[in-house]
Image 1 (spheres, rainbow, N blue to C red):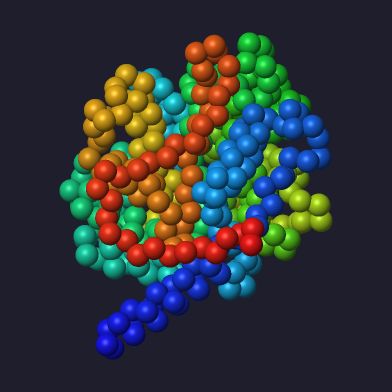
Image 2 (cartoon, helix red, strand yellow; image 1 turned 30 degrees about the vertical axis):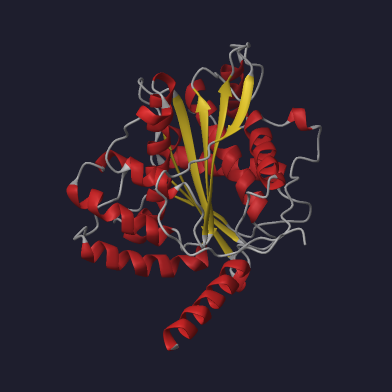
Length: 357
């Protein structure tokens, strides 16, 4: 009897906690200052796909103001740059920065159990025994982190998301625009990537952030921010783009940026690793899906655990994987990737009360 009472009490508290962390009746209409078609395809795709998911009652977003959280942590990583990949993937975690302490404490136990030391958990290292063994517990810890892990995969046949697809001058034009406002120093290819990342990050901050919250964005090292000067200009671009999507009257008193710290910050890298392992796993899955049947796809050991992780939301962490691709007629097509498990594990169902009731 006591076990049953304890179980019911735990379930009740878990349900209350999950509902406090769920954003009820989210406003999914950020693109309202101009005709929708004048916004970049990246932003149009995010808004359309989120609205479609919400209409089907499949979308739960985190309430990142719960428990007096006053700051957002943003962690982004990317994959698909190698020639064999068919898609470029951009993965962004937006979480309550004040909530990350509990995740870090869980990760101390994971790192101790698997003797990881300060080793980064990275997709490229999935074949390492310790990384492979720790992945399940790492992803389980992540499921309790209040936040939204959003991944956008873009067909490599799409040259730009910021102008007509058949206009080869768009990338060079974008590079010149940044150069003219003192934010240049990158080639046209790097500028396209930079703008995709910044617009996605800005849209998600505007979607989940509220007036007065501080923002910290941590991005992985890559060609878009290869040195301190480029990182500074990336943050300046974010500040300008964020103004496009922010709701009227909303300001952020602090907009800070970081690259992986030296000396290494294990706690911050564990958060950044979520974007890394998801971006890498989705890029590999989609590349294989071009030439293989879904049932025949075999992923790198470890990547299948990430796909399983993406098949459902956690108590805290909500997830979505979206696609921008070309259809058989050569036109832009949007889609949501939904993963389902053949033999799903037994899980406790935690209801999120209807956001429209």
